[in-house]
Length: 280
Ligand code: IPE
Ligand code: IPE
Ligand code: MG
Image (cartoon, rainbow, N blue to C red; front, top):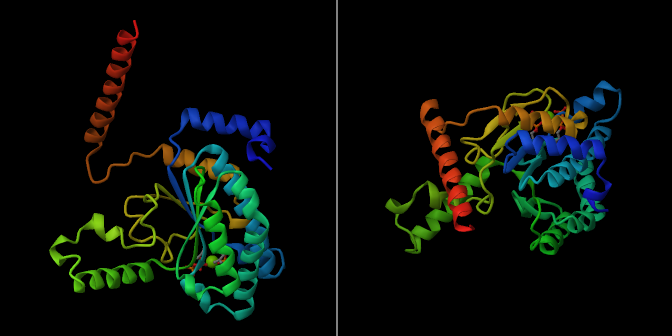
């Protein structure tokens, strides 16, 4: 199904208003937390919480895509989550399998490019196979880039990057004094993805739980009190509104940021006038 065609008129209008009035983040990362609590509150098994969380994934992916978000990164399974009871890990892996089996065609039709970050080899072979074929099938798509963080840990990724750098130094391809922030980030598994602009965490927890520690250095953080299965597109829009109302200073003063904005606006005004004169 084409998501633009199935989209409700009311939602289309809300998205259009958001595009007109807010700054849409280029990259949104989400720590999808609270599936277990959602289920426990209802007297259900934790698996039911994960299943309902998958419904939120579907809704958020569609909404991000039709809204024109370029990158969405979902923290689906952390490297520390392997420490959970075996039965719960099994449920999570089988849900992942179901998602990849059932949804890749629809994602592909809607131009979504699928990527994955994390300790790939530690995933079950069936999941690895499905992921590889999903990534391959969608690699030339130009719509939303959906990155699934699976068996992912930022510290694991940073240590791995250091190992790769050490190897390059040993081979004589790199000298230690040439290592900088720019080339360091090229050794991370997120090398092809821009840094997140907005990092959302659900279920009211104020921590990063080992997610994108390097990349989120200047990302805006938004914590929602909703449990992930309750978090749907309208809640995403609220997060974007909050993001849009903030001033990102990157270490500079507020006055500097305002001046930069003014000069960009002036430049684009001058360009417009210049083009108008040229076309006469
Ligand atoms: C998030 O929900 C899903 C994963 C970590 C895989 P949780 O399972 O952590 O839910 P809570 O935090 O126990 O409620
Ligand atoms: C973070 O949630 C990991 C994912 C959402 C995949 P957790 O539930 O594992 O985080 P902690 O243990 O509460 O920090
Ligand atoms: Mg949790």
